[in-house]
Length: 509
Length: 87
Image (cartoon, rainbow over all chains, first blue to last red):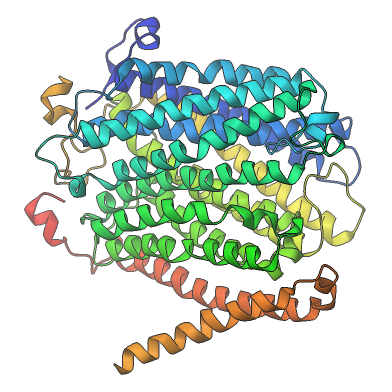
C-alpha cells in the first residue's frame, strides 16, 4: 500500500510530485488545515451567541465576515479537497491504473487551492457564502469581496479540472478486465459527483463573472438600480449549489460503502442498487435548486415542480440507507473507529434527511425559511453525514498513508464527543428555528428559550472543538510515533479486500 | 396482488395524500400564506409524526443491528465470506 510517510523524502519531492498519492497527501493536509481554521471560526460564532449582546466579537460586520469565511472555508477548502484527497489516493488503485489520467493537470488542480484559500482568508469578505446581491455588488467592502470572487473562481476551475480527471480515469483508464459495473462504489461516487461538477460549476462561474462586472459598475445583471434582478443570481447560484450539496454528500456515502462492508465482514448487500442510487441522486440533484427560493414569489406551478423534484431524492437516499442496513445484517461487525463514524453518519444522515423533507414541502418551508432550522438542517448534513463519513474514512486510510496505527481509544473518544456535540448543536438549532430565531444574526433579544437553546448549542460546539483537539493530537502523534501497522490487514479483520491494493498491484511498486 | 395493493395504500396515506395537501395548502395569492398558518402547522405536525415514526423504526433497527451483530456478541458467528477469506 501507499506509505509516503514511512519512507522519508524531502518535502519538495512531495510538493512537486504529480503522482496521485503525493497529490492526495497534499490535498489531505491542506483540507485538514482548513478544517481546523474553519472550525475555529465556528467556535468564535458559538461563543458570541452564548449570550445576547456583543460578547467577544466587536460588531456585526466582523461577525458577518467570520461566518462568511467559516462557511466558505469548510465547504470549499475542507470538504471538497478532502474528497479529492480520498479520490486521488484510491480511485487509480480501484480501477487498477498507474496514476490519474492526467497527472500534471491533477497537480495543477491542487495548486490552485492554496492561492484561492489565501484570497478568501486575507480578504475576509462579509456577504455570506452566498455572496448576497444586491449588497455584494453595491456596498460590500472591497477588496475583500473581489478577493472572495477571485478565490471562488479559481476553486471552480480547480474543481472542474479535478472532475475531468476523475471521469477520464474511471471511464477510460480502468483495467480492461474490469467492467464499469465492477468498479467499486467509492469510485462510482467520484464518477457521479464529478459529472455533477462538470455540469453545474460553469453556471456559477458565469454568475461570479457577472457579479464581478456588476461590482465594477460595467453591468447591472443583479443590480435593481440598473434594471437587474438579484433573484436571477439566486437561480444561477442554486443551480450550481444545490447539486453541489450532492457533490459533497455522494463521496461521503461512497466512503461509507468502503467502511461498512469491511467492518461487517461481508460484501455490500447490493452493488448495483448503490450504483443506481448514485446515478439517480446525480440526476435529481438538478431538479431541486429552486426549493431554496420558495419565498421569492415563484409561481404555484414552479414551486410544485421543485417540491416534487426535491422529494425525488428521498428514494435514492433511502436505497443507500437500506443498503447499509442490509450489509450489516448477519455480519460480524467490528466497531473500530472508522465503523463508529460510518454508523453515526448513517443515523445523522437519516435525521438530516427528515428535516430536509420539511424544507422541501413548500408550505412548511415558509415556517422555517431563513430561521435557525435551516442552519441546523444544513449543518446536520454537512457535519453529521459528510464530515462523519470523511473523518471515518480518514481513520480508515490512516494506516495505509502513514504505515502506522492511530490510537484507537482516542479515536473512539473523538467519535463519542463529536456525536454528542453534533446532536446538541444541530438538533437544538432546529428547535430554535421553530421558536422563530432568524439565522445570520449577531445579536438576539433576551428571550429565555432562545438564550437556553443558544447556550446548549454553544456547549455542544465546545464539545466538538475539544474532540477535534484530541483528533489533531492523535493524528500528529500517531503518524510520527504510532504502532507500526500491518498494511495487509491493519484492522485485524481477516480476509482480503475485493479490489487490489497497491501491494498487489505491480503499477505501484 | 393484495400486497401490491396494500403497499400502494400505505404509500397513498403516507406520501401522496399529504403531498397533495401540502401543495394546495400554500395557495397562490401572496397574502394567503398567513391565512393558512393553522393548516400548515397541522401539516407540519403530521409530517413530523410520520418522520419520527419512520425515524424511530430505522434508528431502532440500526441500534439493534449494532447490538446483535457486533463481534463481541456471544451469538456472533463468522460470516460465510470470512471462511472464504475474501469479501
